Image 1 (cartoon, rainbow, N blue to C red):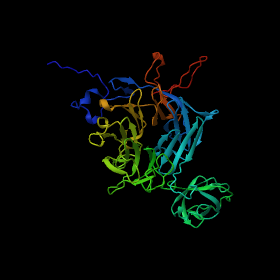
Image 2: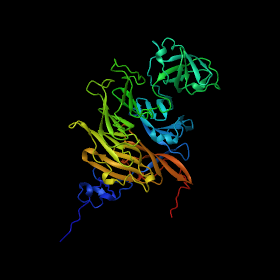
Image 3: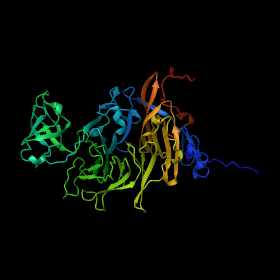
Image 4: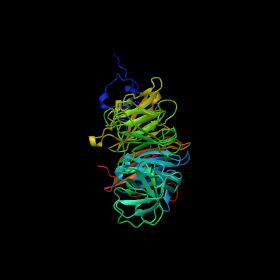
Length: 528
């Protein structure tokens, strides 16, 4: 009897894991691959060679990781930002922004170990940043070489009829420090022991400037700064204000944020891991509560169901998707009247918890990493059932894709989403393999492939520009002469409009376009 060998005409099923090897009864089996390495899979079913990467710069500190973060001021002014150990650097138009002959950079408080837990949200020219060990911050752009990193002060009390900051009239060198203010006498109830204040503008005792403090004992016109010994500081000379605020002290720093209905939302301090705070409507730094004003600030603690489900990320759609350690919840107004202190609720939707990695909004779905770090799921709202739906793990047929050689080298550490020219979800594995998934939900296309380099990818981010393909940027650890460097690179375009000789399929490459011919030496690599 004659046997027929079917034609394999599509590869958009991606790599299949060993658990489903031989499962010919699965519809996607005949569009799957045993290995899809360094090929990008297309929704149409074809496979194309993965473009090479162009070298841009080297991370500042040898031996330490960096994290790449996108910033889009407008459709024609987009930046890539390099967060490293105690510094920030910037890129535009596929090059590094310089200050003279050196890289333009800012000093930051974030250590290498802090970088994975940073969460970012942008509004116009301000990038808001949270981390559970640091007060919220704002990275503000006013020009290509004009960026500032400042504390975000969430005001939560009025202290006088005309001003919202107490004017400092003196500070006593003491243990604890004692601050004298002018507004407190008229409004002695403005402060309470345990409140937080932010001090700035002091001349003389500058050690206290731009810091958050817990309020101690209060008298008619003075209050103590708990735990602050100022006896060795320079004497106070003049100036200064103290602002009552919501966050800033140890274990009272939010770990995630989001924008929703013209409000800036924060969530999950170490002290209150299940609480959400919202600003007043269209007034991002005003978090004052007022039960008589529906536009005032909001504070809400999600039900704990007998255990602590720490909020790990927030992603806004029609409501806010809350990713917690134990589940996915829907947070928003109780009815159509809009979010307010007396019109708010949270309801559990999906009982699958999340890892401490920010989720992504991809078209109409939210994609997140499960709490074991090895699964990736999507969640979307179904209007017919009026609830969130989470289909099977999108690594179900490729459950090997997030696994390295050992448990310590397995799991996802970073993600990004590319829309053009191909819809791809990018995920960085702990061992430095860059995993990609061609992603067209409407066509039920979820095809995984891997990009394996002569180096370890540690971070990925995507920026978009008008009339161009999305730019996929990566930081790669490359060991050269026994030294670990972090190279900042971006993938070259998929589409080649010129001659085939213009194709770019090398790693960390450069091009030479003019001048007299030169000899390039010392770049060969010997293989055993």
